[in-house]
Length: 517
Image 1 (tube, one colour):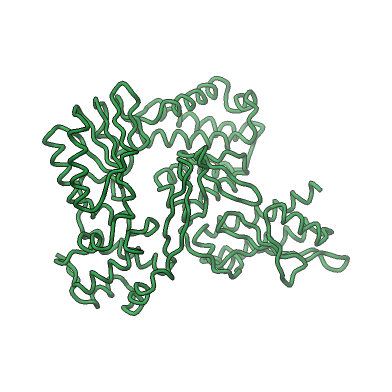
Image 2 (spheres, rainbow, N blue to C red):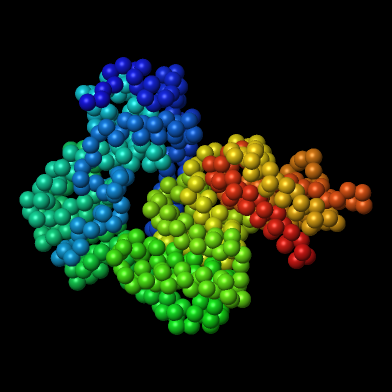
């Protein structure tokens, strides 16, 4: 058994000095900020989010200490091999599905409970227990925005799961818990379960949210963590119905003809990539669905054929990016939406459940759960915005500008992007006045600022990926000149290649805006 009786051993494994750990734990309010995330019911979820230093400390605790504590087999969230599919599977085909919710779970996961369960006395010295509990709690409770809170939630409820799981097993009832959502299924009366759950929760200081208690019989649609479990595990019928209809007409008329009949804008590769993303989501829930697997194979072949022989011909690099969209979406499907919102500074439309991502003067709508971008965007921008969502880690912006060549790996590749962007300014923007350039930047959501250039503007390619453009007007003696810079924390939001493409997209958008006028 690994134990931490002495502070030096804890310091060594966490990789932070004792002075840093105690300094942070003694002034927690300086290391948290409040963030409001929209909820489906129209309300807001308030998160306490740690700053970069505290987050790194908590990540180390999450990686090196919390895995030492066991997690119950009934817990299906925040653990390797877990997920909504694993949570829903045991409840398929049951006569009754009962769903219970713990009332404000994180607010009631208080300091003494966290200290007792997550950092037990048989493993840690009292001094280390106090220090670690302080680093993982805020205002005497678990902060929802901390990377340690999900794992600790499972540890706190381990004994509860064991008691409830054993009780249910004796009665032939299936039980799983996904964070603070508990699901029971079988042939039983809800009244036989609810009092026991309430009693065991009360011992830990938790209570049921009676307003969210639902009991659904087999004759009604039974949903568990967003999946249908009546006869077999599946996604909602309306999602599949819409997808099958699209695929039927694609096969019947071909991609180009179907798009023309429906009046769809964009290229075949963009449309094919959207369909592949939707198919990927369905297959992640039902991997044995041969019809969808065949449809994906057909769509990949049809997309390739359209790309090589139709009116929407594109070069090989563009075709490759089109086919990269599907796996990009599939990767995002497994992510926690609240965490994405916090890290990428995006919100959720409470009416449509779309992600709302401000980008270059417009709100890009991203449909959940398959992460399809609603607007028709050029392929590179489409892909980089998805990559932004996946890469964003919430690191605060540095507030200093750097060239692409100064990013990690930029010495060998970034200078090429800088050179290409510089050429775009000199070739395309000669004769453009400072006033015209400034208006184009503002139309793209840019914020004008002081600088040595004739025009300097900060344009949000994404909420936390800002592109600063500096423009010098040309004259009879000198050509127009310019450059695009990024924040020093850019690598926390996009790779070097994607950052180069984002900067190019911003400059190209300015050029298009100017040509319209």
